[in-house]
Amino acid sequence: MAQPACEYKPGLEGIPVAQSSISYVDGKEGILKYRGINIEELATKSTFLETAFLLIWGRLPSKEELDSFQTDINNHRRIKYHIRDMMKCFPESGHPMDALQTSAAALGLFYSRRALDKEEYIRDAVVRIIAKIPTMVAAFSQMRQGNDSIKPSDDLNYSANFLYMLTEKEPEPLEARIFDVCLMLHAEHTMNASTFSAMVTASTLTDPYAVVASAVGTLAGPLHGGANEEVLTMLEEIGSVENVRPYIEDCIKNKKKIMGFGHRVYKVKDPRAKILQQLAERLFELTGHDEYYDIALEVEKVVTEQLGHKGIYANVDFYSGLVYRKLGIKPDLFTPMFAISRVAGWLAHWREQLAVNRIFRPTQVYVGEADAVYVPIEER
Ligand code: COA
Image (cartoon, rainbow, N blue to C red):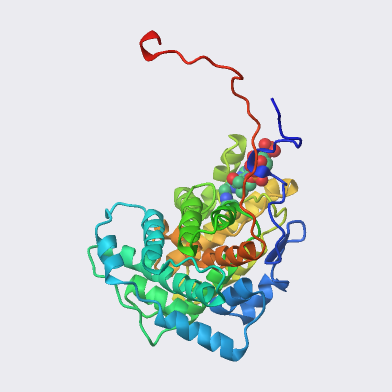
């Protein structure tokens, strides 16, 4: 039986699936760049929407382009009442990622034309998706509490408006800025499971709403999004600074993974974790001290001391949960926050894929029987 010539690698580890100019990671030096620009620089100088433009169109926008992108997004933040009515039928106990995946797919019912060769269609789809995903996340959060969804506010920018729709409270400018930086930090990260899923779906030339819905479904799994929720659970379990050392030593002795540490690519502290830690500190100065931050600092100290020699350091998830919680975001919404942000990366890869498209059709190594006999049901 004919078999593929190349070696099978579980999880496609180390196998390039695309040529991309969107982002770059150096795991040894702790460098992350979007379109060649260091993440630290973007986190200081840019905004999420500008960064999304950069990722998707490959260059920084002019002032006019950015203004028009922001205005278009503001104008498309509302979701149709059909979609809101559909969301009201979702079970309150359902996971917000399942609600988001369903709602994102539902957008295709209204807007899909598959005019993928028209730049205007692509821009409209990008605007609609980036504008509506936060509204859908906030709407489900309100609806599952028995409330009506909150209409987007014309007076608030992208991030401030999202926090307002979620919490019914206008955030302080610093809170909105910190959330905006969180979105920038999670917007893109080379080839990962949800991005690959988006690209495979895109390669069939289906509509972008299906592309995003499949990526949301992929992100929902515990091996991809979600570790930051577990970091908070761990900090709560530890309970005090004194308990940190015995807790961590016990984890190491019993080969239990410490959440928020380690990364397939980064062998030093994740550059996003460094930025998130600074953001957490600024937020606590504004909103008051967080005792879990003291525990987190001690956890990082002990883990680095014990596991640093193996290249295990804090990753992006270690401090993000503390920031989100302080912003009034519930733990089961942490992965949807990731989706609101990562949609920029998915759409960038969607565009890149369309430009050079060839449908993904890998091969397999057949390990089943060569010749089997059909046994009639009454003889089995
Ligand atoms: N705590 C303790 N030990 C860890 C660890 C952690 N968080 N992450 C990795 N290790 C150890 C493993 O036990 C293994 O040790 P061994 O060689 O003695 O068996 C070694 O480091 C390699 O781990 P492995 O799971 O093979 O690395 P990976 O590259 O496949 O996994 C992660 C990367 C992110 C999945 C892994 O570090 C992890 O599960 N981290 C915790 C979850 C998390 O924070 N995820 C968010 C990632 S952004």
